Length: 361
Image 1 (cartoon, rainbow, N blue to C red):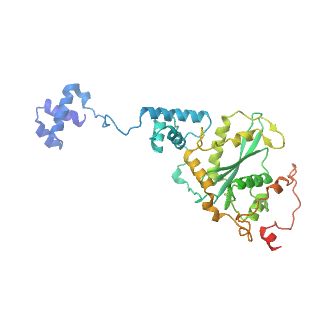
Image 2: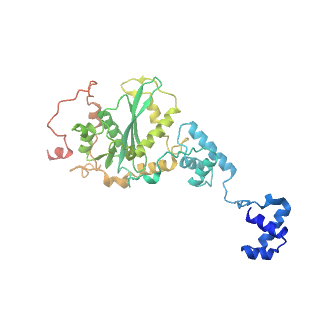
Image 3: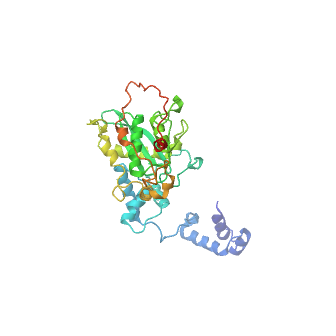
């Protein structure tokens, strides 16, 4: 028996006055009369606690906007793009004047049953997050696998800027080799300038320290004055940004016509046209994650904000005015590839040439 029913019975059945019952239980006499009126109108069921939700809310999201959010979610998922709150908010801003906040969009998606809770995931509060302060301060590189329609597995090399999340490079190879990593790095550096540092995992094409040597990427970064960093083994969280990029890329590729063969000449895959189309340019439809895309464009257009981080060799910058070493892309393209049997060239005692050596000649 609840307090409301007890008060009504005390007044109507026991004949006690409302003033006496109110004084005994510390409640308002007006509230007792309200309960009696409800009882006479609907019986004991009318005494149950009622919702305190207001009848109307002037700042509630309109039904039309809710339907637009749900439609955008389905459209982006069908086309293989990220369909989170940031992407949906970007598209809504193109057609609507007033758009809800990101938290409101997430609540609408959960209320409509479009978000599946994954309790098994590690909470974000337990992770140590880091982010570069400027564009080109740090790049991340990693390799992921993708299966073609023929069943053949290829490898995709991704490069991403740690600050702006700009997708710097995306190349597909039958098997990524050390020379391929250097070539992709120079191709991205020609478009976005050299970074101050590069972060990768402990893959054989990135790191040779556990084999008591160095790979081509380490020699080239040392020559260019770019700091090289790598994560500890079995800890992919360090490269979380590029790992998340792999997920976005694979979701996009899964919705595209499957590539199944090689295209002449050499290693130009049928997969490469799809990689070149991802992600689309800003403002086109469908667009990639809105906030990240905006930051990426700002970081690319305003790369000069971080040019003091770019390495500069001794003797350069005053005459050439570029502030960075020249890229040896042509020499890399003509570099002989290692034999498929895994044979390596005999070790040499000569250290790699440094730009300072050329200046001192």
